Amino acid sequence: MKTRTNDSNRERRTSIRLVSALLALTVLLVGAGVVSVVLTGQPDSAPPDTPALPRSGTVEPDFPISGYFISASSRDETNFGKLQDIKAFGGDTVITFGSTLQPATADDLPADCVVDGKSCARVAAGPRTVERYFTFLDASKWGPEALQCPGDRQVTNNGQSYTVLVLPNAGKSCTSTDDKYNIVVAGGSPASSTDPSKSLATAATKLGLKYFAGLPAPAKRSDLPYLPDFSYKAILDLFTDRFLKYQADANDLPGLAGFYHHTEMPLTDSATFDSVFALYASQNDAIHRILPTRQAIISPYIDARVDKSGISVDDARRGIRRMAQTAAGVQLNIAIQDGMGTGKGGAFSPSEAASAVDPYAATIVGQGTWNSKYLAPNKDYFTAAAAGIKGTGAVLWANLEGMAPATKQNPCGDSLRGQTTKARIDRQLQQVAAARKVISFMWDSYYTCKGTGTTLKKQVEAGLTTPIITDVTLQPDTGTLEIIGFNLEGGTATLNWTNKDGEETEKSGKAASFDPSYGVKHGMNPQLGMISVNIGATSIVKGKAFSVNVTNSWGAKATEFDSLLS
Image 1 (cartoon, helix red, strand yellow):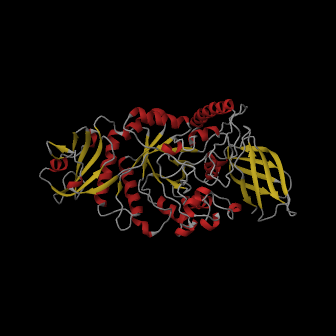
Image 2: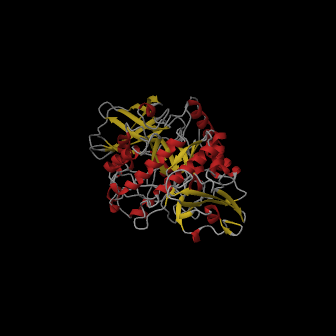
């Protein structure tokens, strides 16, 4: 993944800082108070308030999440407005999910897909022998570029639009070598609508964003519902080619950056998932053949739950390497789902391992400590993944789950998950610094629902200047403290620990230096910076806990970072 240019970074930061400053002014006018960003024993419902303060200097505050999953619309103005909002929020990437190529019978086909009172599939088939029927009801209005073979046709009836494709059962041309054919009824959108994928690519092009379209996916097996049904893989491969050729003919715009693998799997190299690896390889090969300049995204998930025989850190290291080997020439970005929205992963530090899980996670894994409920913290998985992906050419991303397990206190409309908080997201961001880019599931509705009264989007804007510490190294003899994270410039650091007499001890100091390119130099998130602080010698010994906080030049205070001296 190429690092964003200085100009685009500056535009992104300036845009979001202006929004933050306006929100901060509004907060001051209504007399809102400052809210702590440290998680407590109850779900936090109020957003942190860290207004952007006027100051000198060249570095602007920045939010580390730069991409979002979105829902596509069939209306151009809706798509453009959504992408415009995301750009103003600091985003540069949007992603949509794919749809399923679903096996069907003649009776399962859409009832209004008819021509002169006859089934559109039978009309398209003509005298050909039909082996199987399929639907791909992606609610899109496919353009005429999709018609590549004599039997293909577009059907408009009863206000609905469909595209019917006649695929050979054997071979890849329009003529089947065994004289049998498969019929796919695709689309299923209002005849007055536009193609959502083309609409999004057009909007992304105008706004200078990157759009990743969801790839076709197979149905799941009935006996093993976590695996794809490969009984029709040859047809899926052929349909994927037709899908990508349509994108190449109708949607070859700069804003179309690539494609998202809709089929998911855990972050493992287990042979159980051989079929998913094979699917990734075949679809990446198709992308490389048909649209060789486009990229792809795979988003495997962490499941570190102890009671689910979760995935180990070694599984993650081996699994991401095997995924990277499916690239087939495509620039492949592997965005690991952090599991904090589903309760499958835990964002905790070693010194917090023996403390109770937060109330959101408890609704999934039950009451208990982090280390009794999860095999390892998310940071260990991302560190292992960074090692596993090294040298493969693939790029490590993070897919930060921008929601929380649902409780009565954090509803988000009729969603199955609940609204999260900026404070919890900051804790998640502390764990994923090894990733070159952070995307998030999902813009609508988790960032936009009002939930407890304030949208997550507004929480982020109000807390834009908050420092986020991702790592700390301490030399207790010399008092040298190196702090890595986001929004650290001009920081004053505070170190807290308990001395040998059991007394709470604190030392503070101002940053002696700031390295804004730390992440770039170390192949990590390019927005990471590092400050060095000399606080004087301390009495902390190896294996003992300490905590660090930072107040930056905007006057914002970080979520506390807890660690053990190694």
